[in-house]
Amino acid sequence: MAPLRIRAHAIREKGGRADPFFYERELGRRDVLVRITHCSVARGDLQFISDDWGDARFPLVPGHEIVGVVEEAGDEVAEVRPGARVGVGYQQEACFECPYCRRGTEQLCPRQKVIAVDRYGGWADHIVVDARFAFELPAPLESAASAPLLSSGLTVFAGILRGALTERSRVAVLGAGGLGHLAIQFLHKMGHDVSALSHSPAKRELIERLGGVYVDVADPERRASCRESFDFILSTLNVPFDLDASVRMLKPDGRLCLVASPVQALPLSGGLLSNSRRTIHGNYIGSRADTRRMLDFAAEHGIAAVVDVMPFARINEAIERVRSRDVPMGLVLESRD
Image (tube, rainbow, N blue to C red; front, side):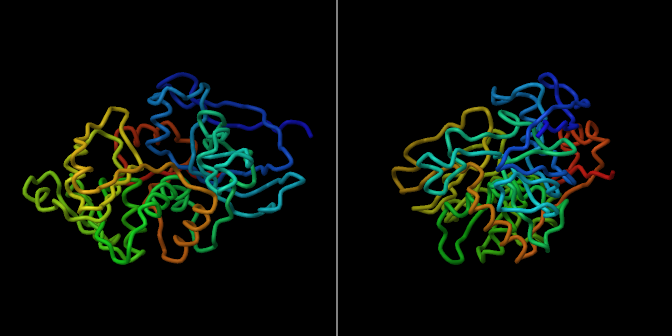
């Protein structure tokens, strides 16, 4: 089979604009060709454009929260068929042979392939992906509002699962942006008492509508009142924050999960852990099983991202809106061909 020629929008240099770009990709026996209908412009995409982590490869085609329709499938594909509406996230491939893959944690595979580092992403007309990482979307999920679930939603959902929460735990979400507003919904629908710790009073109405209680952590007295209050805190912040202050908000035996982190170091006083058995752990996306469970849970409970929608043709305007934080929660590009 001749290689497929794919039209995309690429960043050719660090910090550059998105320009028209073509590349070729073969459709393997385990692959599907997905016609992209929706793709997020997320803050993580901007971090790749800026090469904040030092591993972006240019020319770069970002976009790691994708919804589309399967157009072709390789000979050995059994998971999805042409015509299926699917979601595709950050991870594109795994070896399925290593200990991590064999135990069902493919996201930890040392030979995994991911968007922006190893593979071109969703700012394109099509994408070729291992069919095992293309997930058929439940019918109730609307395409544009579901695109962010494929990475932002998965990351917070899997992080919550790792928290091993007991029934009706008292929990908090640090930050109420793209990741945080999804975490509030998941935690609320799981039956927990959710507080959203934010510096943005303008987000109070949305937070309360999504099932959380707004806590203005810019207010020293309000912040102090949260000391030793929470069983679990999920941090969605990718800017520097006071880690010590956040840990002090945990009850003894409480857990803090980092699902996003700034490039800068976060100092921590070790005694805040050793004297109270508190724990800090991280989370990196989620497994295929986590993805299916998350999508089913979102469909059952009506969980969706709050997004602005723009046409792919206005991609550079969309990038600037996200960069300048002129987007309340998320922004999704839509194909209107």
